[in-house]
Image 1 (cartoon, one colour):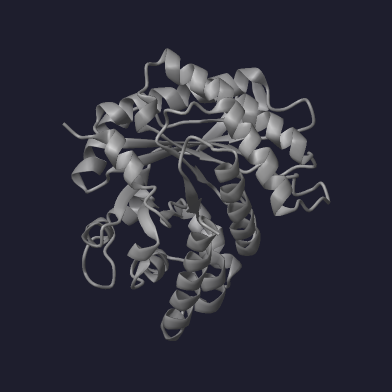
Image 2 (tube, helix red, strand yellow):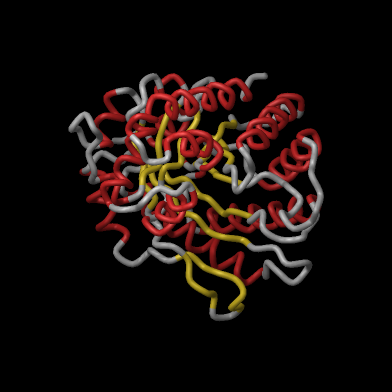
Length: 331
């Protein structure tokens, strides 16, 4: 019998977190293009290898979330990515949702698809080495109009159905209801929406009899919207983020990981450090860590530019950022 609770808790080893390397083909293509890097399946493989093939990442990473394409690719060492990660003590995971579609009842909002055929896909992912999974829902703020309670509830139902299916398959589910940074909203509004989103989610998880001790929550921080013109201090972010989590997240869950969600590497690092300090001060009942994509990759991609001769300097920048983010957990 797989001990899902023990596996889920293992991601929170001191100073370690998750690399989110699960960008879809579309997102990976757009990201590479933004650095002037030509895109192809081979270039996406090299992009993944830049990070997954770097030496010493096991000092900072307990897991990596992969995209389906990457789960089947091999690194420059000739080994499948999941195998080379597992050999270094890094758990391979997989994004299992199939993206978002407009919500019929509220077309300005989206719901996540991917439940059809999920059980069969999970079986295949497990055979290829995945030990955990991730499902993302998207929550958009627009004044008091969005999000609607109906959309929050529908996404929570899908997250719960996903989590139930994943636990039945002997894998650990990460639940990511992302409250988007885009918008002109205040930090206080973001906090209220995070509270409502998570309150709805954990209520529905209970209805579906999901084992909460074996789930990991991936959440946004409480931040002023990107169009608000307001720059929050790390202390403000920490105050509202920790308060939102304490009011809406049950103590039984395995832990909480934060997404960077469009923050710069510096912001994501400084805000994480402040949140870790605040959580300690507030005696928060769950362990916390990071699950960043862009905030860990941005500096390396700017140096790499898709060129072999830049791999060493790009990897050095990646490891330096990993070191800073890891240190933020206990600063």
